[in-house]
Length: 87
Image (cartoon, rainbow, N blue to C red; front, side, top):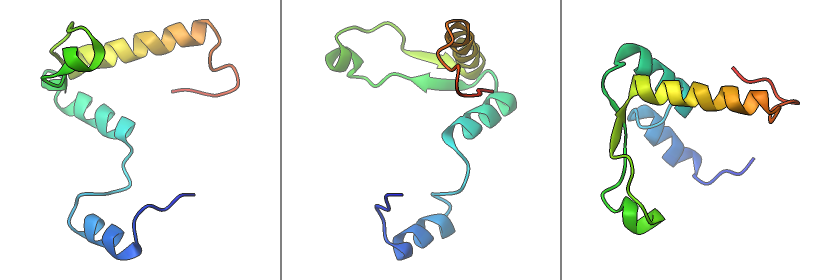
């Protein structure tokens, strides 16, 4: 395990509420259930400069969640995760 921060700094971030034990995917699922029609993903203003095109500017949790599950189903169908169990 790689530790990038000292115990004092980690303790400070936890006590101030910046860090916790909730994963990014769990936080996303909670936000999706609580606020399905809120904006979930927003592209940076310089997306075109970063990747060469600008397609999507923002999407709400419900649409993002549906896309994620669709992609997961596609990956399962091609057995991309044959050795791993996904939710």
